[in-house]
Image (cartoon, rainbow, N blue to C red; front, side, top):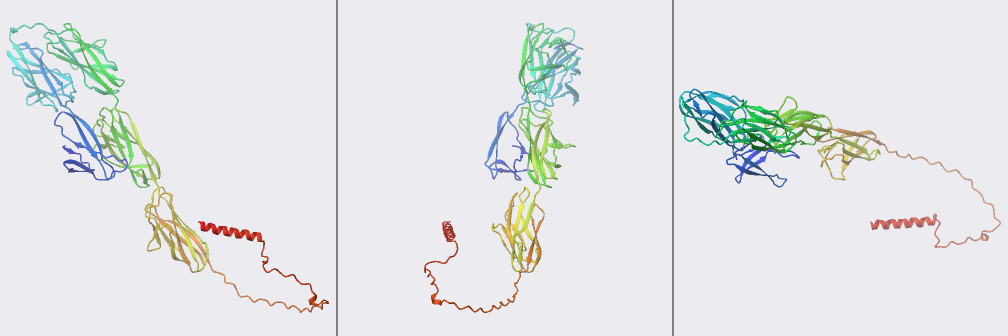
Amino acid sequence: YDSFVDNGLWTLSVVNGKNVWTLNKNLTVNEVVSLFVVFNSTVRGNFTNVVVGGSNETENKTTNNTTTVLEPGLDVSKITLTPVVKIGDQVVFEIVVRNTGETVLTNVFVEESSYDGLIYDSFVDNGLWTHSVVHGKNFWTLNGNLNINEIVVLTVRFNTTVVGNFTNIVTVGSTETENKIANNTTTVYNNTVPDDEDEPDKNPDIFIEKIALNDVVILGSQVRFEIVVKNTGNVILNNVVVSEESFEGLVYDSFIDYTGLWIRNDNLTWTLKTPLYTGEIVAFYLIFNTTTTGEFINFASVSSNETGNKTANDTVEVIKPDFAVEKIAINKSVLVGDQVMFEIVVHNFGQVTLNDVVVREESFEGLLYDSFIDYTGLWTKNADLTWSLNTPLHVGEYAGFFVVFNTTSAGEFMNVIVVDSKEIPNKTANDTVEVLTPGLSIQKITINRTVYVGEQVLFEIIVQNTGKVVLNNVVVSEDSFDGLTYYSFIDYNKLWTKNNDLSWTLNTPLYAGEYLSFYVVFDTTKAGNFTNIVSVSSDKTGKVSAKNVTEVIEKEVPKNETLPEPPVTPEVVPEKNETAPSELPEQPKKEVNVLPATGNPLIMVLLTLIALGGAALRRRK
């Protein structure tokens, strides 16, 4: 472990000998936060790093990733193309540098460290190297990176001034490797060519190598092969020809010859213009276009007048890069006037590093851009609403930031972003945020709209949440009640608390669409039409009022009127009857147990039965 990138979100501590980072804030729904940790590598190999994450609300989760630590390598050889020269002639050295490691090499250089008896003249400028003099020594810097297995050649010329055997020493290095040394010896003679002690048998031989400089390429891009030919025998080779034998899945585009030694023929063959001296290496590059994904083997062959054919091949994998983009509304519902925050996350889940990643705000109707938050320091905002990633996005890596918008009106608004890179065209993502307007209404209903002076009037107060957001701290106030005197309130639900003044506070949130009510009782003291005003407010709304009118009337008292005297009825003298009273017919006597007539007896019986049945039902309940 070396360090971590402190973006202000995490606090580091060491617990039981292990590095522990604690998030300095709560992690909201759908939010993504990242932590960059830096380790030093000491040995080559594959190493798995395991991390555990957890919170108060969740169980621990474990994940891991494996890192491959590669070992760079560099090899250099110095070949004397003219091992024996006459004094005054030039000697030519070919310096061959090869990447023998597992990673790309940068800042590759060649230095002519020692060349006693020789005088530097010039080098063959093949466009690959830049020459300079450093501390009095000739120094060449490779103009690009040296890919895995790639070979580059530098040809240097020296003048000869004295006779003898002279060793030329060259030093090669790079940022990723230690320096390597190579040397070769040249014999300079005067008039007579020195005889070899042992004349070797002639053994012509040739070697070809085909190297895919980028063995994994993106579909639609180009792949470059280096063709390397070496005279591995002890005989000069003539009429050296390289042929492209098979390149299925690839389409030939062009070739690059930094040396100017090759001629392309009508077919896909190339002929070396000069003899190939013993030990000499020559190379050129072939460019192919990719049209489909897959692994493709490319074959090439070489021949000369003195040798048969030799073949070589290499494989290139053509892949399709891919990434995902997410736009996450951190707060999916907000009130008008509040801010909404979106998190933008880009994930490279392809097989190749992505470059020049750019995020663009494509559509944000109903929202007004305010600012962005980048805890990683990896993003740069451009003049328009675009952001550029300052670093390549490696395989499996995430990168993200937050964008803040202001809200000005209610509604559902979709925010759309577009992301592209050098390797992949546009990809879009969106999320929707709902901007809400809180609403609150109140009604005051007079239960008895007309009462007599001295009687009580009863009001029902009904409060409704007419918006889509929960309301808290709901307070009802009696603002005006002239002609009435407060007596009491009735709360069947036990949800309201009366304050010291004539106001009541709801003890629970008022949810969207919910109704709640209570009753208020007033005494009446005088007659008239009296307007009663009540209001309600909450934490998210202003004050809303309602009113009602109660009619209080005087109760009528009946007057004591004088009853008229009854009219005088003149006395009537009955006439005498011929029949004596005792002789009148006798009336029949009524039975003692016979009830007097009181209406329809059947109806009375039915009413009695109904009453008895009702009493039985009440008892059953």
